[in-house]
Image (cartoon, rainbow, N blue to C red; front, side):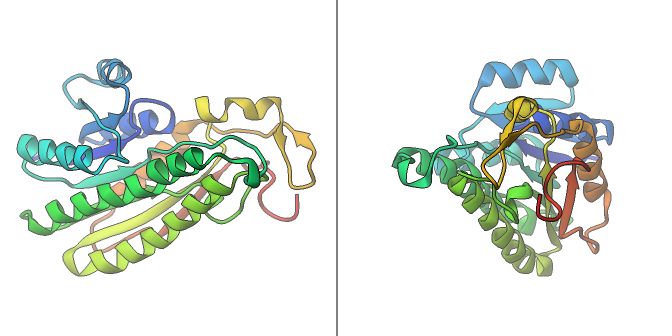
Length: 248
């Protein structure tokens, strides 16, 4: 098959949907996954029903992830790109008040799910001919800098950085390139509240600027376009006026 094959988790909405559009424009066949079948099907039809394939999957479920990648391998015979984009926020409450189930939900969706998907991608990419492929993890600005009352999200995104580096090291001898994109305030349903005010480090609430998710999609498209002997290990794409650089 001449077309390249990609899997985008959380590919039915927001940033994942924008990434899917860009990859289709680059000639990929894209398998999008998420928990809501109806949302995935609508997005596939909207983007390109011939190039986007919807497969529902909860990435925190090990068996469901194995079934997802088995379907990809059976349908297409290979995998060239995995974009680990799926993730959830937790309630913005003092960390001592956070219910245990919210912590577990964040770890499952943001970290464990990415690990499960990388495991399955490695298995396919090591065995296929030609060997190798690329994995891009969504790290978020929170992979380096927290917001107030964001311990679960921040902890999982810091962990994604470690997972990216470890997988990059383990994959390079098999022509698997693993990198990370750290996103700052891409406009989506998840960031809609930012225009109304977000808690800052000093406890005040201020609106924060966002950027079009298409900018993120173009960055991922660039990372995916590289030959496997080149890699973007980390890239930050952010709203230029957001309070991240410096002490604000």
